[in-house]
Image (cartoon, rainbow, N blue to C red):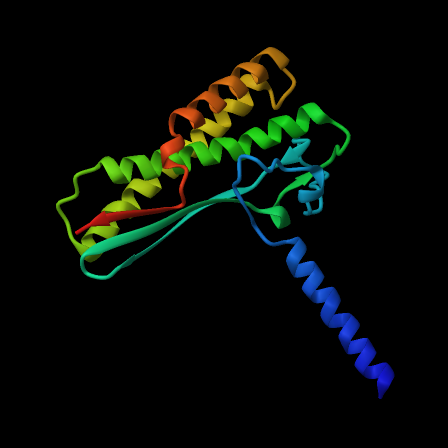
Length: 185
């Protein structure tokens, strides 16, 4: 019986440990991703040397007077992978994908706060959902442009230009770095 309880305890700890490892990582400009964060099995048939998967989510709630939105940018370890854990240049390239996602989360927060909505409650959430969808399309195009112009990190000069550009844009949108925004109805 003791062995059975020990076995169950070990399985539970292993399951909890695996679940913790795959938990999405919220964006924090002070904490950079490492190759240890890339936990998915690499796609051997892919042309890419690494894949960074990010997600921008938003949730809304209202008390009838104020709408509160939570807009978060996360890195998805269980969907992100690399074939080369030795390349610092590749890691910097992949990190910038996460920064670009944060840039678009900030752009979305800014646009929502600066838009004069006329709708209320559910119609307002529908309008915000359309803004979200538009920003996600822009983000996808921007990420592809980044990969094209840097040739997935191999053009060092272009990589450096993009790093400066994105970091300066993040600074310019610093006041939209907070996940939660509120709007009066």
